[in-house]
Image 1 (spheres, one colour):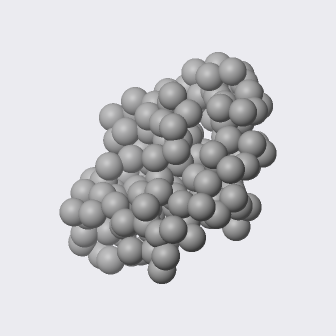
Image 2 (tube, one colour):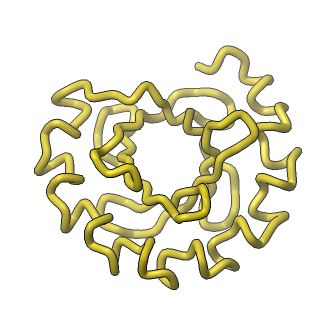
Length: 159
């Protein structure tokens, strides 16, 4: 658990409700649904369905099923970053791949649950292992990432 859940929840550098500069509901430029430059379906450079070098389904070096050095459950290859709820509870772990533009997310049971692809604007789009677009993440005021659902709801902190 984060050292103080209240510090996390009420910190304007982290919580997008208190900071419009990091809130995709307040700034259309941060919301991929309204900004085609960061929308993976409208920008082929960042869309893993178009750019297969960013897609673990088509690039064995990025797939923990093919590349066991990326499988956190088998190797403990942990980046030191965790995925936390807005209340500070750990819900997953981050594993960096050899590609700077892609990182993997494992759940609390060490199962591969998602991957993130850099959007070229300082954030990431998040996909299920099957390639379904699930959400996105932006850097917050302390240098970690706020994760949002496609509806713009703050769902996690990656730090």
